Length: 272
Image (cartoon, rainbow, N blue to C red; front, side, top):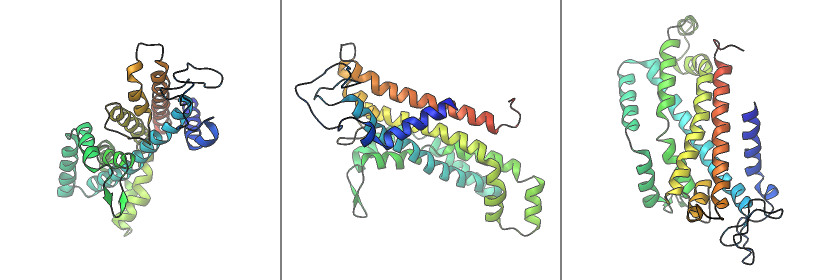
């Protein structure tokens, strides 16, 4: 519950960034460059006199957007693939699991780097692909395999249960059996894996941005802020690295603890 509250506060802060942030993330004050944290600038200022606290709050919008976007899309893909493979079985199961294995061996970080260089800024259906949208799409197609295998295993067990046999005998369609009877019994493991995917997506995007292949200005993420301030490591200006790094760490810890809590809550064998 404590981690859920922390995560909720972080999410609300980035959603209402114009209200929470005391300054514009792009407002420059060249007379106040690299000033350490004070009452006016809680996290100090950067190389151009911009308020670091405001930039961390606005950067969280991109990082959290990528995290939750990837979690939702990858969970939908993985649940569909896993449910079809587990329920139908036979050659469908073998085909879908071999496709899953293929995606498991793909070097995700390398694919993201190449895709970012090749497709970022390109127009699709008359709309320009932003780097954060591209990151969501690529990460979603890379991180669905785990939930697909989890759902498949659950479906292999559930399809032999009496309530599924009864639904099948009453003439219920495959879609109805999966959607109304089987998926509701998998909500716990799906919810736990979804929270973990949020953390993995945020960490992957941060790593990519730190390497210079992620979100590009004017948009910034937590990883981009760390990369932008990497030259300050070991100096008196290292606070520019510490605060976005702390934002990443705090968010990931809250998400992981929340996942552990959900796992215990949905586990009927756990002791309360």
